[in-house]
Length: 184
Image (cartoon, rainbow, N blue to C red; front, side, top):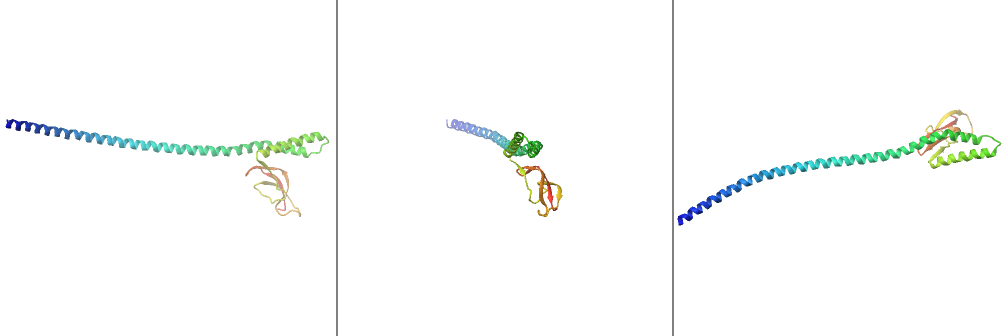
């Protein structure tokens, strides 16, 4: 019986060895599987990082577009206002001439003055100012000199009179004034 025990123990030892070898073989595929999973994980992390970078760039581009569009809108309004006012300036000039003309019909003159004043009020609401620099030094950025005179009462290079009023909105010149310059 002792011998049988030894044989059984030997058989059991062999099965333990076989089982251990099977476990070692089973762990090797686990290592391969683990390496594959790690490789796939790294690949997914890299892909996610690329997508995140694309997203951030797209958001920055959109933000720049929004700011640029907003700035363009702000720039368009003054330009459009200036163009519209410029179209009304000949009418303003004619109403001013009509208001200064001599007439015996006071109601007619009163109506012309009323329209001229309303037009001036509309320009003020739009932020349009008259360039009136009589007696000041000539500035070629604001005025066009169409004539010159000699006048001892005025200094050198001074605006003596205005042929046609100039208009501006803020820093933008809508129409420069046509002036006579003294002693230039």
